[in-house]
Length: 308
Image (cartoon, rainbow, N blue to C red; front, side, top):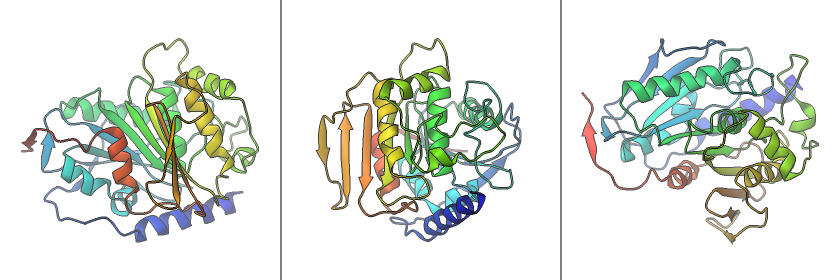
């Protein structure tokens, strides 16, 4: 399964790097590494992109890469940086450092709030950025591709009080990849054979932060119908999980087609799911980041301030 993981991840990385960005623009800002940001049990690396002009009390986006990738790869291979320049928000680009460069979404430590491993380091990056830049703690978002999408779902379950919304591109439900033997790969989940009721999936997400009764982040989900790396069946399981967490029916309240091969279903205002007809695991293409930013509400006009 490691061979499959590597093949899938390399394809995703190549496609993301090759994807045409929607109007690339030069920027005076640069990607910078931050080395001291708080508790970081797994030794993640952190890169930060702060555009030259920020919103007043800027929002923050945590953008999580695929297996074999890195934060700088995510920065270069997607258009979140260009959108940050346009809309004045900060982007955190973390990097996993284990051999596979996958994020931990499997260990018992990773699947509970403040349990340890990668999610703790990711939460530290967010807290550091909010403090350092006087950011708006109510407008923190998370997104990711493949391993980063799985991490997105885990972070939304572990830290629902930290994130206003998330967008997961080709992921699996939070907790689906759980293992107890030290392995980071769960073949039953990746192949779409772990099927649960909405309530069961919702309980798994709720168990990541027992006793939490506050508001839950809104969720946008993306998946290609021909995905064999993280089987398309996981898309329906993700919908089941997050609709249950929000107390919603799994019957869509609306359906439309942003592009001819994209089918978007909405479940109230909290969950949005985009199915990509005929698309494999390497789903990333230009325009997807802009759809995530729209879902987050970061495309709305705002007052900006220069960064010294």
